[in-house]
Image 1 (cartoon, helix red, strand yellow):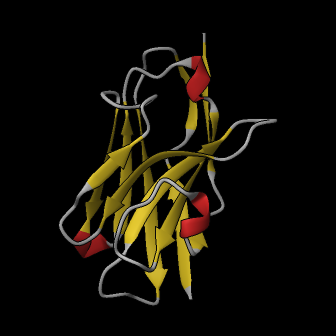
Image 2: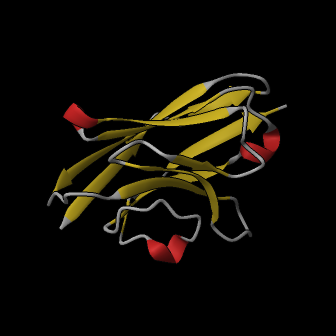
Length: 124
């Protein structure tokens, strides 16, 4: 089993920055991918960014490209999401997820493990 724990959310103003973290623990895999998704009230969960742990190849949603950066720290088994120039439409609960297969994916159903989420609120 894998446990994922997000942290770093909060209430910020438009244009501010936040860095989310996701600490992974439990079972390990030889190659896997991790991603960030978000869900706003009344909306479906949507893809934000993903990274393949081995090699570090990344994917981004068009809405965050150029503003958000996904990264990982191998020694700490920790995933990050650096969010800059935040907008009100970025307000959502942010979830990290792990996919046992190595390739990064935009599809939520491709991921096997999920964290509990952390709230990000961007005010005008």
